[in-house]
Image (cartoon, rainbow, N blue to C red; front, side, top):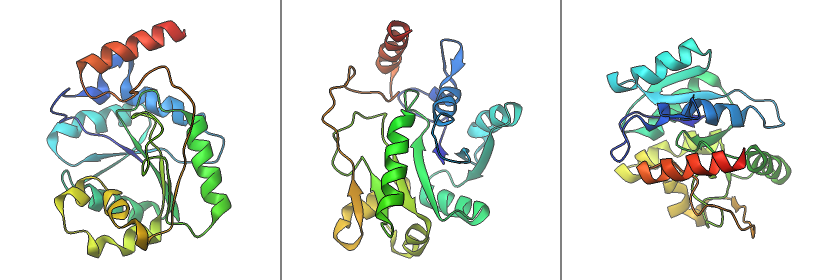
Amino acid sequence: FVQARMNSKRLPGKVLIKIKKVPVLQLVVNNLKKVKFKKKIIILCSNQKKDDKIFKYCEINKIKCFRGSLNNVYKRYLDALNKYKCKSFIRISADSPLIDSKIVDLIYNKYKKLKNYDIVTNCLIRTFPKGLSVEMINSSTFSDNYKNVKKSKHKEHITSYFYDNKKKFKIFNLTTKKKYKLKKYALDNHNDLIKIKKYLNEKN
């Protein structure tokens, strides 16, 4: 599931901004297509008019797209799970144009190896730069805990409830000692856009 929205305050419409003639959302999808396991890539946006552009882009480019609640993102995921019936899912943010398929593979393989874990993540203790965040979540754990999600923070940031109550859940956190070229790989503002464009130009 790739979480996307158009109403970003610092950089409105950022998920469809083009970098090297390719929209950010498409860069995310292209990188996720490189993962080695069998997968479905589904964009999760809101049912608000602002996100019509995301839906239309997905429709034109034959990318699966699911629409749900704008502010209760947890419910959006829950509704998507009820439709797609997957035992587990991976959460990726659409403002991560440099998301690394190798990290996604690492998280997936660890989740499969550990078995019976609720979440395998690299976000609980952050050693990876922002924009390389990957979380794999057990669908039953996620669905069963919706009744406990009361705070707006937990509704908006869907794994924050589990991290705030980490002693109640089996969570594995993947860490790295690798020194990354950028301190931040996420696209939050115009300054990030400049740095990411420069990084990709130098890389190619």
